Amino acid sequence: MVRSLADYLEQGDLLVRNRTRVFPARLRGQRLPGGGAVEVLLLQASPDQGPDCWQALAKPLKRLRPEQKLSFSGGGSDGGTIEARVRAIRNGYLWLDFAPGTEVLACAERLGEIPLPPYIERPQGPTPEDRARYQTIYASDTGSVAAPTAGLHLTDAIFESLALKDVGVAEVVLHVGAATFLSGQPGRGSGTVEPETYFVPEETRRSIENCKGRVVAVGTTTTRALESAARQGWPSRPKSTGLVLQPGDPFHVVQGMLTNFHLPGSSLLALVAGFGGTEPIREAYRIAVAEKYRFYSYGDAMLII
Image 1 (cartoon, rainbow, N blue to C red):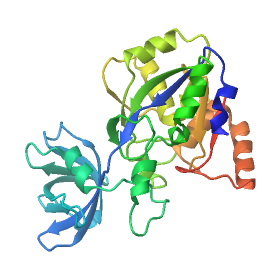
Image 2 (image 1 turned 120 degrees about the vertical axis):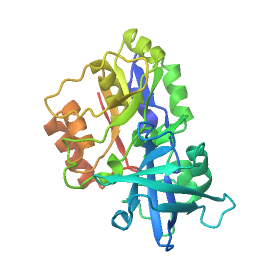
Image 3 (image 1 turned 60 degrees about the vertical axis):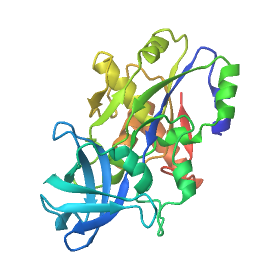
Image 4 (image 1 turned 135 degrees about the vertical axis):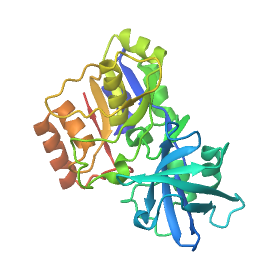
């Protein structure tokens, strides 16, 4: 059980977690003119396209066109409305221009829904409990559209038990992007991943250098951040990574991993198989299926050390 994590780690080990925070990135609104319904999933700001431009996914994308205006509201709440203009549509993505000076994240907090993955069925939309539960207890840096789900298992009591055993804790940031919502689409198998922004603080790099035991990553997002940083010379500023790790690829930093059970054919499962070995991971998944473990975001986890 994850609550016994300290029993499997040793004095001098370093547990590294991803402190990204999920924001209510799903906006519902109307197309103007006409009033047809539209749903947008904000992904990330695109300052290279314009100071108030955001990249997004949208439904129904085929009914949108450049220069069209969209209006978003809070579904009857008192959060008001915001409008955006479609700047461009390319490769399944939408770029939206908001009014100059619009605080898009603040508006999303008022008007948006927490963007649960499509396999979590909520016919009436996400619940208030989802908004609280789909977040790690240490989330602080806003920017993700999906939770780093291995971290959802961790509690204050677990961290207290790790401290008593002199297991260190460090943090990275990797803002989880569209991969969760694009999984299974053509051309997006285990060999590709949507670029995501990450940052490894200087204090975390120093903790890794001084670690006397093993560096244990909480989840695949933390693993990608650490392994990307090592390959890019430990950059001191946020960087973008499209790193894909698969069986046969070296791991330069991570020596242990806490991870959930992932979608078949996904880059996440390929990474886990690359780290733990294809046959051991295959056997772990066979047991998980036989024992009816829970998979995906709100599912069970395994520790690979």
